[in-house]
Amino acid sequence: MNILVVGPHPDDQELGMGGTIAKLAAQGHDVLLLDMTDGEPTPHGDPETRAQEAAAAAELLGVRRRMVGLPNRRIEPSIDARHRVAGVIREHQSDVIFAPYMQDAHPDHVATTRIVEDARFDAKLTKIDLPGAPIYPRWFFYYYCTHLRWVADPSFLIDITGYEAVKRDAIVAYHTQFVLPEKNRVVVEWMDAAGRYFGSRIGSSSAEPFFTREPIGLRGLDGLVGLGGGSA
Image (cartoon, rainbow, N blue to C red):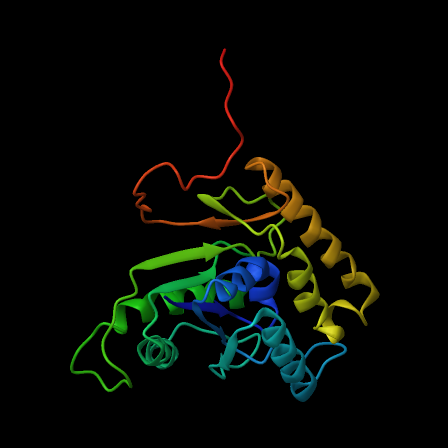
């Protein structure tokens, strides 16, 4: 299965669903990370260093990475932006798309998700000047990497037991973002705590939350993960 994970800035995908990315890659899926911007400027970073950090994180997760090249802090929904993303969807032949949850305090996150939602539609169009064959990705899921101070209310959780360490390593690979700035070091602790909390909801060591606007089909109940029930 071809899976596209879109982030406004390098590190958003790792923070929101790094464990799931590593797990999907280990299962043999073709996972492509698509960064809308280079994430710079930041207080301790620069474009070259951030690119090296992003490449190192992708290698740790076992996936490939591309960048759209929109300006950081200035992402806006436009025909050009959504056609750039639609072209990537078609070249990759993405079956599944992950994008940030649509409600956020960061304008880049909100704009990114709108662009990707529109690009999903444009990717299926014929008689349009885009690379690759038309495709309409069947599933579109939202991951949580939000700047709002609230607790996610997800549609489903993915068990990432055994992938906690690689997620942590992929986050810490962004040395300029989560190691050099002392105030940001706590973010890694937050991610660990969130994983344990969501894992506790399904009886696993760690999990990541996701949201969907469209129903997920099940072939049965044998694939469900959760706490065992008891008789009253």
